[in-house]
Structure formats: structure tokens, C-alpha cells
Amino acid sequence: MSFDTPPDRRGTHCVKWDRMEAIYGVSAEDGISMWVADMEFEAAPVIQKAVQDMVDHGVYGYFGDDSKYTAAICWWMENRHGWHVEPDWIFTTHGLVNGTAMCVDAFTKPGDGVVLFTPVYHAFAKVIKAAGRDVVECEMTLENGRYEMDFDAYDAQMTGSESMVILCSPHNPGGRVWTKGELQAVAAFAKRHDLVLVSDEIHHDLVFTGETHIPMANIAGITDRLVMMTATTKTFNIAGSHSGNVIIADPDLRATFAARMAALGMSPNSFGLFMATAAYSPEGAKWVDDCVAYIEENKKLFDAGINAIPGLKSMNLEATYLAWVDFSGTGMSKEEFTTRVAKDAKIAVNAGPTFGKGGDAFLRFNIAAPRAQIEDAVARMQTAFGDLQ
Picture 1 (tube, one colour):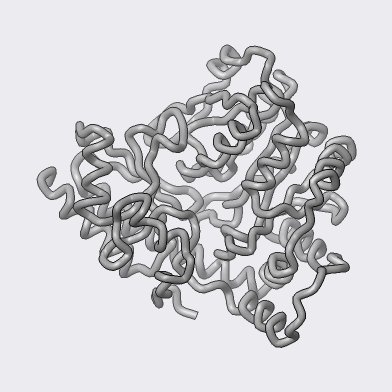
Picture 2: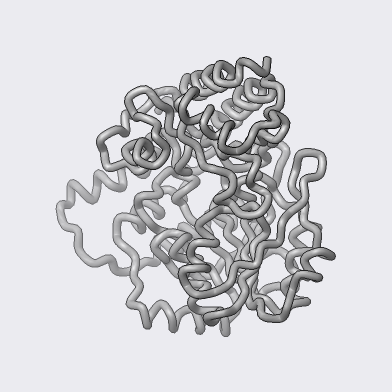
């Protein structure tokens, strides 16, 4: 398949294209959708075949015997990430936003604080607040254009009411691949404050040249409070399958989570399981390698074009396909630069403030798209901010 061939997603019940005018005022007819975090690429052929096999069979009944599915997950984590997973550690949720909500439900109680290192993926705060828990924002610092964590400051923020911390690894929206030392510091912070540590690693396969993602599960001494979350959905562009995995090695945590899953009658849909089983394979691995290489070239093109505009700075991504652009150097208000992007460039992007403290001067752009679209977006941005040249 070619990543250069753009699929036409308009009129297909695609939230990314069919909802952007209502939300951002950008028409799908002449605008570019760069907000929702899914790719403008068709799924891997191995996944397409799995779905076609289901269609050819013609029966969509209850799924049973998930041994191939769990074996595929274990194979992938061992071979791609050096992380040993046992099949009985794996729970399947309806995506990782649901997985996050399930963790909040299982391991905290109303009124508890849940710690986030902000700015960070906006859905975390939404489900925490909806569950009647308090969002505790520990704002990260910008050092030489990259995010770092200040645990002395975070320790001082803790009140004792916190019961969970959620880490986004690799980081969305900043694209950081956390180092072993940084992961150890997060683990130590969780221990000091007796927090359950939920590590959302949904972007762990989308890592660029020279960087290595380290699973939090491979950090020593954290197993008794660690909950891992992974999924095929971001890696393989199958978010609509709404499948994700909560992986828990500790038996006590696992029993608590299993009880909540049972109480809520949670079970996965067969499409997600068939797709994930097909994805976690040698054929799937080859597709991912090709996809990441393509996105890395998009990143270089996008960064060069955006950074050529005085006052704009695209953060160097170590992972993910979500460019995080700083507009603070323009001297503009967030309303002005946001309006220029939506009205003048006609590009729909995510607003920085939705990611929490530290996001006000930023917008997030999805660069997982055919290269011609990235070139078009860069040209539009250079025109929209042409008076700064």
C-alpha cells in the first residue's frame, strides 16, 4: 500500500472530518483536518484481510477462546518491547479512554485526587472529573524546548488525598520518550505518596530514529502498584475498533480490576479482537516500521516549514504523530493565533488549553497523513502568518 494515497473520509461518519465544521468552523470542502488522533492511512493489509475473512464468514456472533489474541499480545510485547506479559494479566477494554475510566473506578474513590503531568492528553481529565475525582495538575517545565518533570515541586503539591497518578508514555502532546531515569523518578514519586501508577503507553510503537521506549513494567520495584495500558488502535489506525488492553501483573490489583469489570458486565467486541490478533504479527510489524518511517519524514517537513515562521516553534517529537506547536513567540493572544489557523489557514487543530496547565500557547497538529497534505498545511500556515516573515 502507499501512504501517499489519501482516503476520502468525508461523509463516512468520520468524527475527524464530518464534525470539524461544527466544532472548529472549518469546512471539510476546503479545509484540512488535523485534530483527532487517528491517521489518514488505510489499515494494514493483514488487518483488512482479517475483517474480510469475518465478512466472508457472514456470522458475527459471540467471541470465544481468546488464546490466539492474548498470545499475539504477549508475542508483540516480548519481541517489540522486551517486556514479558502473561496471558492472564490481560484485560480488554473498549479503548484506553475506557481503560482509564475503569482504572479510576477500580482504584480510587469519589473525592480522591488523581495526578496528571500537564499538559497531557485531554481525555484523562475528562474521565477523572466525570467520575467525581479531583484532577491534580503537576505542570511540567520546558527545558531547551522539551518537557521535564520537577518532582520537588510535585512533592510539595501533594496533600495526602491523592490515590493515583497517570503517566502518558510516550508523552502526548509533547512527544517525549521518557528516559529510564525519568521513569524511575515517576515510580519513586508514586511510592512516596502511595499512589497507584497507571502508565498509558498507547503510542509506544510510534517512536522515531535514535529513541527507545522503555515500558514502565521494566522498571524495578513498581509492580505492586503498576497498571499498564496498551492498544493496537493508535499503532495500526484502528481506533474505531474501540479495543485496548489493561495489563496488570500484581495479583491483588488484578483481582480488584477483575471485580469491577465483572460488576459492569464488560466484554470486548469480536471485530477488535480479530483485528488486534492480525495486527500483532510479523506482517503487522513490517507495516508499522514503514508507517513510522513515513511519519518521520512528515515530521521533518512539518518542523522545517513551521520553524521557518518567526515566532512559531514545533517541539521536536521523539515519538507519536502529534506535533505540538508553540505560538508564544508571536506575541499574539491565543484567540488571535487560533483564529488565524482556523479561519485563514483553514486547518482544524486541537486547542492547547484543553491539555491542562502549560498548554495555553500551543496548538496540536496531527501529521499522520499523506505528504501532500502536510505540504499543503505548511504552505497555508506560512501564508496565514505571512506578516511575520
